[in-house]
Structure formats: C-alpha cells, structure tokens
Image (cartoon, rainbow, N blue to C red; front, top):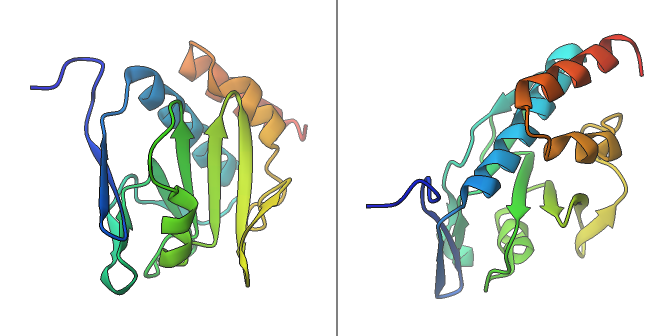
Length: 167
C-alpha cells in the first residue's frame, strides 16, 4: 500500500525502458495548483479547454507512452492532447520530451525549480519558447508566483480577480 506521500503511480516508456514514479504530495500540490490556475484562466478568457488529467497516451510503433501530470485539448478532442504539463521535482531516467515528440504533442510545459519551460513542437523537434503558442496571453511569470502558494483557493481567487481587472 502506498503512503500519504505517494498518491499514485506514473509510468513512462521509451524504446524498451520503463520508468515508474510515485509522485510526492508536493508534486501533486504543484500539479493541482497549476491545473486550477490554467482552468480559471481559460474560463475567464472564454477559451474552450478540455482537461484529461493523467490519461495514458502511447504509440506502439514509436515505442513510447506515458501519463502526463495534466493534459488539455484546446477545442475538440484529438488523438493526442494539445498541451501537457509535467512537474519535475527530481531527475528521472527517461527523456520526456523525446516521448512527447514521438507522440506528436504540440506543447509541453515543464515546471522545474520554481519556473516554467515552454516547448513547442517544430519540424526538428521541440523548441523552447518564452510563451505558449496555444495560449499566447497566459503570463507564466504570474503563474510561477502563484503555483507554490500554500492556500490554493486564495491564489486562484487572486488570479481570477486580476484577470477580471484586466491585469
């Protein structure tokens, strides 16, 4: 049985190597806070955003598969999500960007060491960007300031109120 610090198990698979991770409560807190903030942003900006959490995505022909921390479709559901994000608190063995590239995921957001890394899939692989192509007005600096706050509800309200005020 898993303890309180291990809410579930996530698997990542790349070309014959399987990685099994058990997220900590800190990991799940950051993931949940980020999801809540992104969802309130989409709601306030009238963006059709559909969340699918940590659904398993795989592509057998490319020998890749994983369960992202969160996944979203902008608009209708497709074969792979438009946006996934990963909370990285410790170093894993597998290259998650290589897995996502093989799956064809357009954007990957990585939360690492208190900041976001935004990657957009281009012809030659992922390119690091300063902002999202799919949600270009989303302020990742503001998100970073809110993600690790202790009171999730207060942080989400503060973000919502700032969005409504136009700031």
